[in-house]
Image 1 (tube, one colour):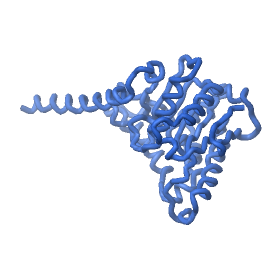
Image 2: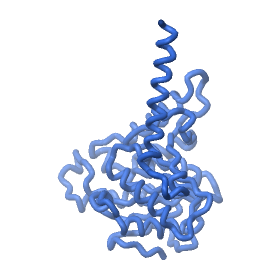
Image 3: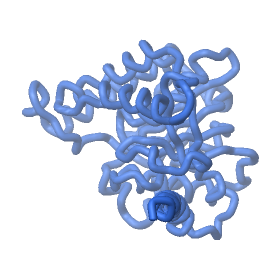
Image 4: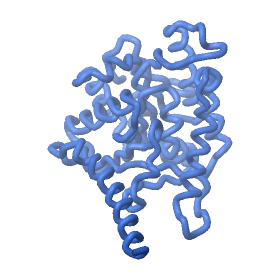
Amino acid sequence: MVLLNHPDAELYFPGEQGNDLRLAQTTHLGVGAHQDDLEIFAIHGILEAYSSENKYFTGVTVTDGRGAPRSGPYSGMSDDELWNIRVEEQKKAADLGKYNAQFLLNYSSNAIKVKQPNSVIEDLKRVIAVTSPTIIYTHNLADKHDTHVAVALALIQALRELEPPLENIKLLGCEVWRSLDWMPDDLKVVLDVSNHIALQKSLLNVFESQIIGGKRYDLATIGRRLANATYLESHQTDIVRHVVYAMDLTPLVYNPGMDIERYVSGYTLSFSNDVRERLNRFREVSR
């Protein structure tokens, strides 16, 4: 079984006990910062596995979620009480979504945000080595949540350090605390998540401590997916009903010397150039 560094780390197998052989059948891996992040950004992988007999989704939740905002019936809870509830919610989502397995690494957000979270990187290397997925979903590098970006960077570093390196893996950075509709269409990875809408809603509603606690992630997430599909193409009717956008981070894995900041800045520069070109084109016409 995978040896993890944090004393509170846990590996949960929905439905029954599992082992390394069960982990090895993973095809889709999601690596997120908090409980409920996977159900927001990695829903494409969850649905791919849910609907298939030969695809398997394994989730990794890196932090313990203790610092989440709370109100209503959760307002008086201590961080430890909230942590216990959020862990159980994540396990319930894994049961509902028929995940292959769910890792709960249980680091604090502060531990993730140090410059070199070596224990986190080592844990991720071990998880990736034993699961050997073909596609990994994580946070996009233009996300505005510090912990999300820190998790994505730790994951990239883990993939770069892995020996032997994985072959033919795809790494996608998806939407949570910043939408990716601003990306030029030719750079977007468009993930169709039109199936199992009821399941998608149920997975989000599992996280009652967040929804009743003051954040309507359930409504906002489904709304974003619908909006992405509707506004994807301006001159044709909708082809898909719900869409998640992703940033392709794969080149950062196979080119370890590639500067990450420069790579992400290439996306923002492409967006800036697209806006300027359109403005200038029609300014010239109007003169």
